Length: 489
Ligand SMILES: *[C@@H]1O[C@H](CO)[C@@H](O)[C@H](O)[C@H]1NC(C)=O
Ligand SMILES: *[C@@H]1O[C@H](CO)[C@@H](O)[C@H](O)[C@H]1NC(C)=O
Ligand SMILES: *[C@@H]1O[C@H](CO)[C@@H](O)[C@H](O)[C@H]1NC(C)=O
Ligand SMILES: *[C@@H]1O[C@H](CO)[C@@H](O)[C@H](O)[C@H]1NC(C)=O
Image 1: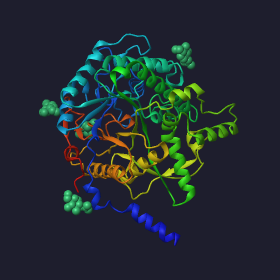
Image 2 (image 1 turned 180 degrees about the vertical axis):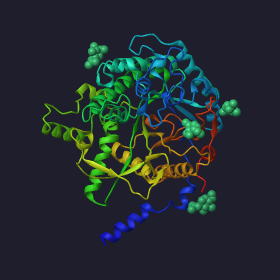
Image 3 (image 1 turned 60 degrees about the vertical axis):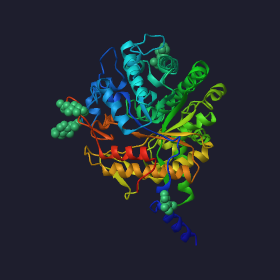
Image 4 (image 1 turned 45 degrees about the horizontal axis):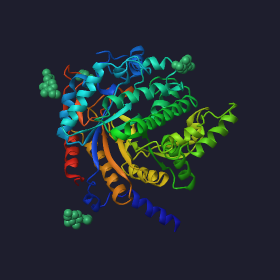
């Protein structure tokens, strides 16, 4: 009987979505957007006073970090071609455009109390004003991984004093653009900034301090976020009336076996990834399981104290509730199971969960980590609802990497599937989802994958001096979804 039930449950969860789902439409206030980030699209890396970020510095020092040895010196050349980008967003019918600001273009000296670069300010003023003229809401990511190199030379996110510099930078943006920008994201994917950049060498600054760097960096990122939120609340929100969130990245972890143990492992993996950042924002502190396990394991490893830093009571007060919405970047699903065969010290060992994939899941042709598992998004939204009291969630990234083809039926399948899953989460599960942002408008520099992984609704010919943009088939499909506010079967 038990077996029969689990087979039945399996069939219910794995079956194709039912016909009614195609009759659901997106609520009238649900917003659709597209996303990008400064280093990945702007180029003009040394023009008009901009100084190096950690990405410029490292990819110039050692081009072989990137598989095709490319870098962001020119990228999509959006610093010069931004008007064309805005036209593409307008024709798509998107309600908003999520882009990031390059810290070292606005403050070339990077530190607090340094001069603003008027030419950098003019670039973003032009972009913001044009978007508004075309009826597109600007949404700004304050930090999308491009730390000014001069701050890295002072320890970067390992140095607690960085919070003062970050808060100064953020306040500068509120002063400059906050009369027109009402949607702010402080940080994009702290887990990538910190775990990939400071605990490993998968992202700049490639520090590789496993089990230590990621925790200290994340602590400073969370404190910088909280301080920024409170400054905005005090000094700007009464007049500007904007909203602030943080975008956290997370897989859905599906229990590998239908067992209580794997369910526990998958739940823990979610707390160690999404919960690492969202738990503090909602509840004021790290998930108790992280605090307990890292403390215990650190002591066994001979550390004098936990490798996970501690918040003071006043910091907990400051961080708790420091969000108007939760930004969620979700791309794919993995399977979770118990496992401790990781090197020590490491966040993987601390978490104690191994991940794998079901080989049946369709894999992206240019990103081996990315599989098309639409129901994972629905389960993740339900998990957030249950764990955190149904906070407003804005999906700030979701996308697929195709080849350079214009006939991207794989991306179309992915978009339709994931958006149907969002419709189910809204209509059947009561999840509070504010909107959806497709990553990305354009093909762009996909970090260490260079120009090989194409995430754009619009193809970019990186070999042309013009960086010619050509909409793909998926651009037309997303355009139709935005217009009809439903998925066409
Ligand atoms: C979907 O809506 C159409 C009309 O809009 C209706 O005829 C059809 O019965 C609905 N299908 C389901 C499965 O609810
Ligand atoms: C951290 O920043 C402070 C202030 O800028 C600086 O004096 C100090 O040397 C930095 N620490 C490290 C380890 O770089
Ligand atoms: C540039 O063109 C060459 C030759 O056609 C091709 O192999 C390469 O992938 C192209 N590079 C990009 C970034 O499109
Ligand atoms: C430059 O790009 C535009 C639009 O992307 C295109 O219409 C034009 O043909 C391109 N010019 C060249 C020389 O490739």
